[in-house]
Every structure is written in C-alpha cells, then in structure tokens.
Image 1: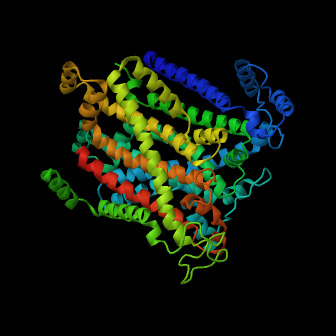
Image 2: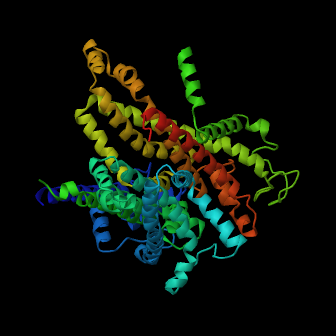
Image 3: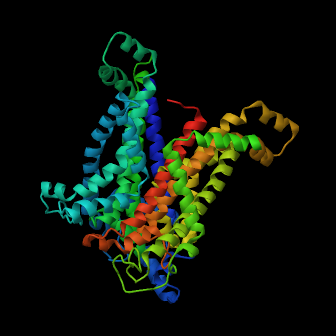
Length: 318
Length: 279
C-alpha cells in the first residue's frame, strides 16, 4: 500500500495548494481593480470624506496581506462578511440557498449517474447497431445544446402545453420533501440531459477500449456470453476512468446549476450570485465564487483519488 | 496544389450525411452573418410595431418586447453572436497556441511556469471565474471577450503543448536548431504545420464552447449589451412569451443549438478521418 498512499498524499497536498491559490486569487481580484473598489461603488462624484469613511468600513486602510489572513480566518469560522447591497450577513443569506442548490445537484446526479452508466454499457454491448448509433447522435446533440434551450423546451412542453410540472420552481425550507422533488423535476431533468451525454460516451469508450485486450478474447473463447464478459470482466477494469468522469461531471453539475436556477427562478446559490454580479455586490460574489470553486476543486480531487484507488494495477503492486 | 484540392474533394465525397448536413448548416450561418443587412426585412434596432405582436404576414416571427421585428433580429444575431464568439476563439487560439508552442520548444522553467499557471486557472470553474472577473472589471463587450479568451486559452495551451511535445523531439526540429534557426521559425515553420490537424479539430470544439459560454453570459444579462441583437439576450428578454404557449423565444436558443450540433458533426467526422481511428 506504500506507493498508493504516497500518490494519494501527493494529490491531497496539491489540492490544498490549489485551494490556497484560488482563495488568494478570489481575494486579490478585488485589488486588481483599476483605481479603487470604493470609487467603483460610490461613483466618481464621491467626496474624499465619504470615500475615506467607506474605506474604513470595508477595512481597506489595513495592508492587503493582513486583510487576506483576517478574511481567511473569518471564513474558517463561518463568517463570510456582509453584503454591500442589503447589509445582511452573507452566511445567513447563503445558508438556505446552498442547501437548495446541493439538493438540486444531487437530485440530478441520482438520475444521471445510473442512467449514463447503463446506457454506456448497452451502447458498448450493442456496438455499431442502430441503438448505438441512435444514442451516439442523441448524446452528441445534447452535449452541444445550451442549457437554457433544453430548459425552455422542457418548460414549453411539460409546463405550458401539458401543465404537468410547474415552470417556476418555488421552494422554501417548509416545503415537504416529496413536494420539493415534484417541483424540481424539470430543472433536474435539464441538468441530467446536459451531463448524461458526456458520462455515457466515456463509459462506452472505456469499455470498448478494453474489449480489444487478450484477456477479453480469452473470456469469449471460453464461450461466455457477451453481456457477462462486459459486466464481469470488462467493467471492473474500466471502473477507474468511469469513476473519474462521473466525479468530473458532478463538479460540472454544481456549476452548471447556475443557468438552470436562473431559468426556473430557483432560490439557489447560482441565482444569488447572478443577482449580485449585476448589482456588483463584491463580497457576496466572492463568497459564492469561493463556495463554487471549493466544491469544484474538491470533487475534482475526489475524482483523482478515486481513480487511483480503483485502478487494479496500482492496488496490487507486484 | 491541384492534388490537394482533388484530395479534399475526394474526402468530401466520402463524408457521411451528418458531416454534410453540418457543413451545409455552417455555410448557411456564415452567409446569413455576412449578408444580414440584405436578408433582414427590417433594421437591427428599428422599432417597427407594437410590443409582442404575434406571427403574421408583415412580421413573420412577430415582434419583441420593444416592438422590434424578431426575424430581423435573429438574422442580425447571426452576425453579432457568432462574430463575437469567432473573434474570442481566434484570440484564445492565438494566446493558447503561442504559449503552448513556447512551453514545448523552450522546455525547462518556461514550461514549468506556464504549466503551473494553467493548472491553477483550470482548477477554477470557467463560468464562475468569468463572473468574478466581470463583476470587478464591469460587464462590457471587450472585457467579456478578453476574459473568455484568456480562460479558454488554457485548454488550447494544454493541447498544443501535448501534441507539440511529440514533434519537438523529431530529427528535423533538431536539424533546424543546428542550422541556427530562430525560436519563431522553429515554432511556426517546423512544429505548427505538423500539429495543425488536432488544432483544427480543437478549434471547432473550442468555438462551440466559447459560443455556448457567451450565449449563457448574454442570457444572464452579462454578455452582449442591448440594443445589439444577440441570441442569448433575446431568449431572456422574450422568455415570458413561453408561458402563453408561444415558441418564439425558443427560436434563438434553437439557432444556437443547431450551429453547435452542426460543428460537432463536422468535427466528429474530421477527427475520425485524421486520427485514422476506424472502429
């Protein structure tokens, strides 16, 4: 287990370093502003006194490296600062919305992952048949559709034409679980369609890649059925790339949620972030960015580590 | 030269229907973008009627929230949205491929520095990064093009560096070095021609990605600004019509989808042909 632990430790260290640099970038991006953040917010006409007072309020009279450490320390204690627009506590503003976003992303993942792996296996099993070609065409198309096209097309069909599901997803902390699931179906299906295609294509490619190996030929010469060969012989060895692509897609899902939330007016973190970007409410954008970036990096890190751990060649070193 | 043309014609003759369909769609889009003022019945920002007029003989696709002709705006949108996406992709390729070639040719610390910077940039989700930067520098066209081009050049850098690495070790590059050719000559005349096929395929995919990102930002109200006709913001501005059973707002979104699908079909076939991967 020695070399494997070392590799995992290396990845972890690299991931932590990346997190540190990303937090630095998010913090410093405000410093790169031409002129000063106070001027950008208060406008050109502000008197020197108001600018000075505002700078004190934001703590800009302290050197940057001290402010960075204070900022990081506050975040570690769950204090994300205050919104410039509403003066409310950001942690309070984000809390419920983050849960909503995670709910939507996990809902989509629960549909997308099994669906993608099954479709990928079937496509590899019936390779070059009409089924495979049809799936290939559909996935190639859905990869290239913008999220809002799928979202509005679904709204048009299922909310307006047939009135099965609501087009505006209104949930709050009192909404019962199954009611929440029902209301979230359209956004979840939108996200599923966007992510399934990629995962399914990678699953198919990973299996097909393995099918040329001698041990698979041996299995088929033994007279095993094609489905048994794929599920019992090829799948375990293809697991590493498949797990990797699933984790990467989950990371994508967490970010892709932003657009879908806006279309369905879903009260999630993405919606809050977009609102804050147009209001130029920098502390809120920074906090939301940090949360999205950290989730994205952690999921990618998980992808790396899981693909090391699920690689049979590394698990059983000779 | 004649044989090259004949070869490409022969290649075209063997192309599957999906690639032909893709090329046809791309041609139509390019023609629409170039000839927009000739084809469009009304001006880009001209207010011609009342708001939200339904489809009729005068306004084939009705009018939008300000009473502008939808069809004309969709036609002009081909010019604006596709044009901006094309310019951004070109810029991303310029930055990414030069940096990638430099890293592959120089090796050593230059490669290390560029690669580590790119690693960090790729660790942040692009849409989130773009939103952060646009909040700070303000949302306008030039800022958006620069931000997306720089973010996207990281992917171009990775590919260029990877494929160029295989070429750099070849004997003819060594020969050029011994001949005393400069860095620029080696990059442009010795390496670039040998990596143009994967780069061309990547250009198609990158264009799709940039195009989707720009449309998404415009849809969020942070990309191309009004009154410019643009497909992303047209969807957003007229989205309310959908709840009345009118599919007009979906048309610009479908225009985006059709172009990206078409490009993907062509790239898929191109990769299949150039990689020699005949399944």
